[in-house]
Image 1: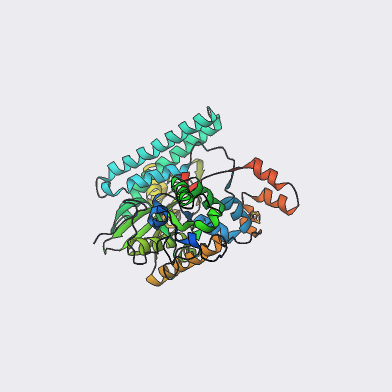
Image 2: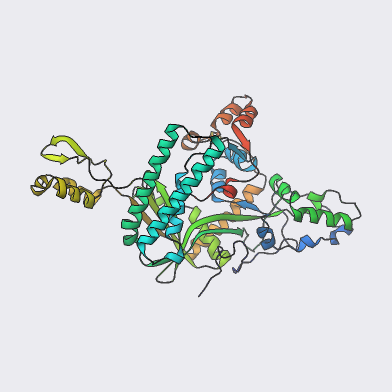
Length: 467
Ligand code: SF4
């Protein structure tokens, strides 16, 4: 059986069972983005532009949608003030681009390693291709950095080189040791799968939005100009209140990008998400949040409902930002051992044993490393973890309902106020203007000097990353 993958021709297939009503047709819901003025029907109601025949697919194809992403949903739930500045005012902190976005370069390596066309081919060739992809991405980033900032300082270059070494060794370890053990029983179907799907209500009804961003987007588009001009001609220049009375708004959609879609030997589909991390989740306690995590779960909903792909769940792949190294040699013998048995050191049982066998066989033979080796075998440092979360049909349906309700809240001109939290405020990029606003200071000045107003959201311009 084959399915319409969003990646095959992004944004142009909507074969799911709950295809929404087309915007522009009678019976569509009133736009929800902004309260609309109700008026009595009059003679101009029958007058339509060709553009009113557009389907939601046309809007998506032309990128004329109000696209919601998981990051925005989380921000909305976390703090309305921060959400308003980041997603409605589109204020982003002015930052100097880094010489190396490690997560982006690592993502490139994974994308190449799991490319379906190379799958089950020579593992060594796949590894070399992944390493080469990582290196090219790093080179490209440094080049871009130099173009924008001139020659980098010495410490920037040192850091850049250290992280290339880190990435190269991580990729080697992943391809040589992790992949042969874990990558069994499935095959990649597609990597880097972008999707954009309509958010619909219980009856398949669309949400339309008339927020400032949507108005601007429509006004600056060829379609918007044509729609306006068509009506103006038909109404002999009597086109008043265009946005209020003649425009439906843009459909609200859900967008995202998944790292990999794979199919297991039983024919079920799984969404894979790769994450590089300095600290792995503590199994048995921390990974429980994945059961409730709504990011990848909402991707399951999007693929299942709108592309008719029977997704069984997701696989969350954690990759430690470290690689195994041989135990450190001590400057002098300690309790008869030449090598450190420091449990903080990032090594593996196999690597440590080989090192002791080759360089300290006597101490190994009399059991001076036994405790350490046993610990490494049972509880040693982890460099990789996979969490496989199954989602049943009911859960996926619930996710769709929740996305719809949340979208309604977000586009219905919600009240904006600060929602401080012990953890959220500490890492909030808007902390300074937020404090300023609380204290009655000129926070607008802070916003205008430390932030820049963008015309595109980060997901429209930023490459995929594992961070
Ligand atoms: S500092 Fe806290 S309250 Fe202020 S915008 Fe950020 S998250 Fe909200």
